[in-house]
Length: 258
Image: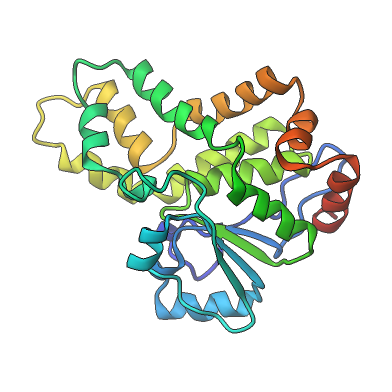
C-alpha cells in the first residue's frame, strides 16, 4: 500500500518484485488501483505528486460515465474496456444475480471456483485493452497506472501479464494477485456480516463472498495453467497474443527493471 492512500483503494506499486534475471521492477513506474473516482481530495493530491503520465481505465463505458476518473494535468487518460460491455455493463459491479447463484446451497464450491477462474482465464486472450497496455509500456509512457472498478480482477490480470513479460516468477505473481484480499478485507468482512442471518456460513458461501469481493487462488492458477497448456511457454503466449517477441521483451525489461 502506498503511504497516504486508504487500503480500500487497492492502490499499489508493482516495484520490488524480482525477475528471474536477478533484477527487480523499478519503483514509481507501474501502479495499479481501484477506480480513481473513489479517491478523496487528499489522495488526489498524493496521486498528482506521483507524476503518473498515463492512466488506463479498464472499466466499461457505462461504468466510466457513472463514476468518471478525475482529470489530471499532464496525464493521458485512456478508457479501454478489458471485459465484456454487455454483462451489466461492468463485471466488477458484483451483480446481485451472479452472487445469488454463487451462494446457492445446491451448488458446490468447486463450481464457484471454476466459474470465477474461467472468467479470469478468458480475459488474457485477444484482449485489445491489454494490447493497448503493452503498446503504451513499449512507448515509455510511464509512470503508468491501470485500474478497473475494484482493482482486483481486470487490474489483477493486467498485473499478471506485465509480470510475465518482465520475467517475474509464478509465486510472486500469485502473491501480488492475492494481495487484493488483504486490501479489500473490509469489503469481504462486510459481505460476510450481511449474511449473519444464516444459521451457518458454509464453505460454499465463503468462497462465493471472496470470489465476488476479493479473489481466490484458483483464479490465478487457472490463468497460468491454461496459458501453458495452450502455448507451452509464457514467451510463446506473449508473442502470439501480444506481439511481444524477444526484442520487445528485452526492451520492456530494460525499461522497467533495475
